[in-house]
Length: 427
Picture 1 (cartoon, rainbow, N blue to C red):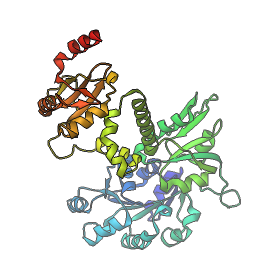
Picture 2 (picture 1 turned 45 degrees about the horizontal axis):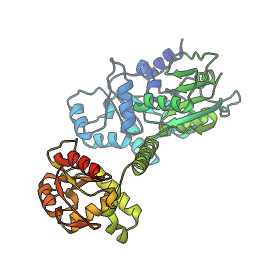
Picture 3 (picture 1 turned 30 degrees about the vertical axis):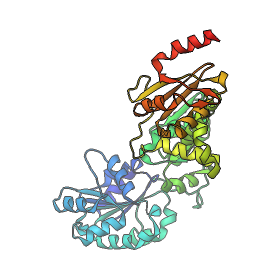
């Protein structure tokens, strides 16, 4: 008679059963051979309940208790023959008279060693209310829950091999491993991150089933929790990397020694990469662009604030929503109807730079600084990009004033090329 058959027979005689299995719902396939409906699975938290629902076969659909209102309705309608939930949530369903543990045929206690300490009282209440329900207790370390087994599963037959040596002492770790803590639903992404970090030539990703590590393998990633025997097979050619949840870390550390974390790229690292890219972009902009006009605009702020603070404020503003007011956004493309380019007959040969033009527009013409766009200064003339609403006023206001001793003429940009060529020829 196999262990499963012996366990099933024990349950039929009213005895409880202990199953030794890694602490993951997807590893507890034996449960479905022993379970009889209606059934309740007691697990660590709502996330673990959802994992049970995901691992359940089609013949035994599991309702995870992640919301009390919906779970109450389903139980009262008889639409949830198997439920999985944390002790406090199941206790709440008991108090609402929705859950009737006395009528349950099977109570599965999933890895009580992983339950939070505050849940111990709620767990005792649930077990007391379970009445004659058959109990299947899942554990990866029976010695760690001896007191609970003595109270609720005395002399229960054991399915699986407890991690003890021939003398009954705790078995030593099998070998070294590294681990990455990740949510169950993110294991595929975590496996890719591990491969990116290790950059192996011949990786082996184990998703369960028979272990068949090639001799040429230089990296092993286990996306499921292995048994001790499976872990020994995985570690034949390379140190395995285990993808675990935080609750599974004690099991991993009992399985492997040393068991060290493996650092992989995370959201903070990706954010740092984006920051470095932005810094490189700004550095190139500083080295390749004439920023005289921008510096002239910001000069008053430098007297009041540190330049770094001004730069940080500008970066924050560029990432946030447009400020209130009627100032136009920067032109999306050349020829944007919201902006107009004007020609000014002074340039570098006159000793005129962008900051001189900005100063004249703000002080003499009273143009709002938000209406001033890109300024290009050439040898004999300059062009200024202005908000369309300010262009006519700028043309009228600049014409006739003097900048660096040179009398200014301004006009729309359609005359810029001809005027610049004529003036260059005359000189």
